[in-house]
Length: 220
Image (cartoon, rainbow, N blue to C red; front, side):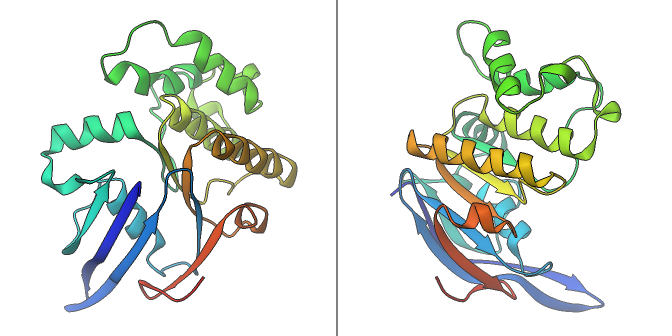
C-alpha cells in the first residue's frame, strides 16, 4: 500500500471553542490509485491534504507513506521526502513571484541532488499544459488559470509517486479542465497515484470517490 492514513484528527479553536477540522479519518491508497474527495467548503478537505503533504502536523493519528511514518522525520528530512516523492498543488497562489513561470516549474528538480539538466523536461511539461507562450512571464502577469497550470507542471517535475492536489482544475475553462483530466489519466495509467479534492465531475469519473463532511469520511 502506498499511503495509509489511520485515525487522523486535527482541531482548531474559534471563538474560544475547539472544533474538529479532521475527525478520526482513515483511508488507504494503493500504488497507482486514484481518489477524489468531494465535500463542501469547510468540510476539512484542505486541512486533510495539508497533513498528507507533511505541511500541517495532526493532533492525533498516523500517516504512512510506503511504510514510512512521515511525522517521524524532522522538518528537513520531511521536506526532502516531499520533494522527492510527492507532487503537491495547494489551493490558491503558490508560485514564487520572483521566478519566471519556467523557473517555477524547474525549481523542485534543483532542490535535491539530481543529475542532468531540467530545462528540456520543464519545457515539455509546459507545452503539454499549453504554457509554452508564457514560460518567460512572471506570476503577476499570469491569469489565474495559467498560474494553476504552472503549479501543476511544477508538481509533475520530479515524476512523483503521488500527486496531491486541492481543486486542481479551479480557475480553468472547461476545455482546459478536460485536458488536465486527460493528462492525469495518462499519468495514472503510467503508475502515478492521485489524491484530489475537487468539485470537477470529469475528474471524479476517473477513480474512487470519497465524500467528506465535518472532517469525516461518509462513503464511497
